[in-house]
Amino acid sequence: MGGKGTFGWKSFQVLAALIGLLLFGLAGCLPRVELKERAGMSMPEKDKEIKKEKAVEWISMIRERDFATVLKRGREVLKDSSDESLRQEALYYMAIAELHPDNPSKNLQRASGYFKKLLNEYPESALAVQARAWLGLISIIEKSKRIDIEIEKKKHEFSK
Image 1 (tube, helix red, strand yellow):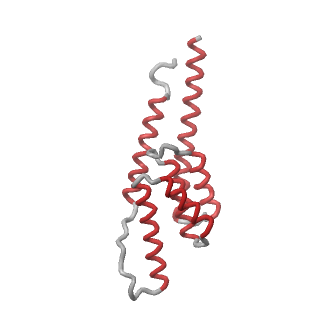
Image 2 (cartoon, helix red, strand yellow):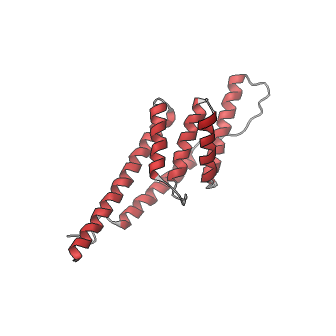
Image 3 (cartoon, helix red, strand yellow):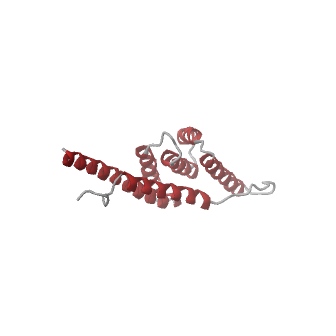
């Protein structure tokens, strides 16, 4: 028993790589919005355009690996804005920044917290579906870590 068939560090690395690919795949599938002239648009159309521009801004910061700015701006939005769609995006992209594989100070617990807050405050949001999926992946990662720790403990016990 034990041996090469156990779920260990290499399995965790493969899982993390798959999640990283999923992150990059989702980022690549996000809509790219062309900025349009706003002349002649009604107020709701202008608001819609501004919100699209904001989404592009969040995505650009993530692609540029500017995680600190994503988190800073997200905190500002949560503190100062009453616009629900902007607050939803802030929570979502803050969570993405916290769990991004290229973020040297990633924190799965904070990412989970942002996703849970998004689900609690905006359960009918389109982003809530994605938040649920991410929470499922984070749960798998955390379970994988616990399993790896248990395996290492068992290996250590058997080697005595």
